[in-house]
Length: 155
Image (cartoon, rainbow, N blue to C red; front, side, top):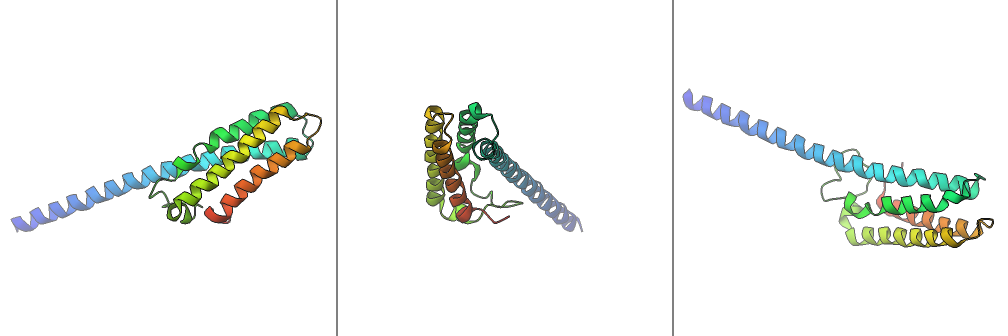
């Protein structure tokens, strides 16, 4: 009976340790998912503002460069926001992110390049002529959509 009690205590300790460790790991990945979703929420917010300025007549044309740079700053976290194992939990990230990391990295670089071009255009473009900024902004949107097609679950 004494041995049985020791086995029961050990088993209980083992189960509790596993549960605590599993909870800690799940909490860690949850924080990673919340972090990356926040990054993409920031990017989406600035994209909406830019759309309102460049295509919908909002007169805050002087803030285009600010919003373009803010998207770039948020996008810099793109590659670090998907560590191995963070595909667990509530996420719209497709397995291809972890299965094809080099392709995913290239998609992020394409976005970075499009954003750099958009920033350059927004710094030099004639504020009265939106066509050049609109064209550069569309390339940013295409880079976003290209990544979404391959690496993000449809919502």
